[in-house]
Image 1: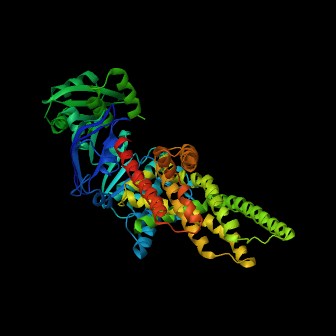
Image 2: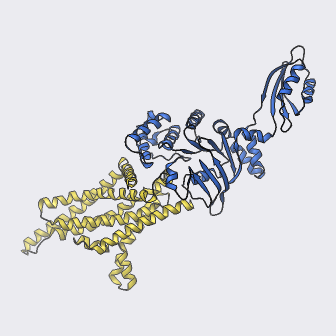
Length: 330
Length: 255
């Protein structure tokens, strides 16, 4: 659906986007991740034909953004970082205006306005002035505006920035809801957002592509091996930590055993396997054969935060890394 | 053109839902009304004096009231034009709504023409207020309507040219005040350039004087439709809108 090849954007002195290439398949929901100033907004602006690229190419739905911008614009719904609303307009009036801009008219337009108002939960403020709406409502009106012409591609620039936690959840649910009908690219510097909403992640830092993969693969790649949480309880008699730990370490394929916690007669371990080895079956057998209870055995998910820091950390000087890390962890 | 009309309607909407349009209309109405009242007063007094002295020079409403008043309208308009154009693009740039327009499937030119047309329509509304005053002349006197119509056409063309310049200047900044002040300065300069022609006859002076928007209004004011002058205004309009388009484009390259 979206193909980007060697995309570069130079400003007078800085390179905002440096030879980025990626592809997004139809119906996918992709997270564009990076610290502030990484080049996310610039890339999105190029995709929406707002800015021209300095080099490289980008196509949306088969149309080049430089050659056929009008065709691309017809197929894209765009929500910039601040929703582009006119404070002196009423919600319905504004949606009508945007709908007309996107080429809708008559009964079609009226149907779409009703539909997006319903969908984005702004039906109750249809006759309110946009300037008087709360931030959450404005964001939703912005989203309604982006989907009014039922575009194939949705591009959302930090759709949850500045919202309160409840609004953030609602917006994320709404975006996930929309994923079936549209191909979605959303940018964010908040990691859990990507983990929660996206299937695919594109990580960029300082204009360079750092990684692009599915969320799950990235998690696996960061470790390169399996990591398992094991909870063991003693059946009869006290569990001796060193004995249990030794037993687990004996299992073939295990690289490291860490004791996380010891409560009552239960012990929590984090077991890390050697690269490319799956150890869950062996672990279970070993525990049961030793006569202990296996209360829990689950793979521990690596958080994207760790991956992100691993991937971007190497290129960033220490003090900036700290800054970008705190931003990322917000 | 449908798209330009959509933009135009939206612009008119924002003029008329905010106090902007009403403030301009009121101010323009009051100021022009004052001009009209004064010039009618002079006319009446002059007429009585002539009668008392027994001189019967022909008095002419068109020459003595309509013509000077029409060029006065132009001068008053000079102060109002920056107020009409200053927000056109500066506001969109400041609030970021320019991103909505620029990423919608419409051409830059349609945006520009739509906005300029809305400004021209608002200015026409101001002119309508002056028409109310002139209507009294027709009720109590017998002026010729044709020169008046040509004069209005001239005013519209003149305003169209200055509005195009104002629209262009509005794309250069995010700040409405700067856009307004710069537009006023440029308009005023284009106005007074004519003075050069008064004392200097060298080529450069003639060129400068020719560039003045007021030189070209003379014929319209007299009720003469001179193609040369109409073409001058149309050229400025097209140039102004052309530069606006280039400026909007360069905005994307630079931004």
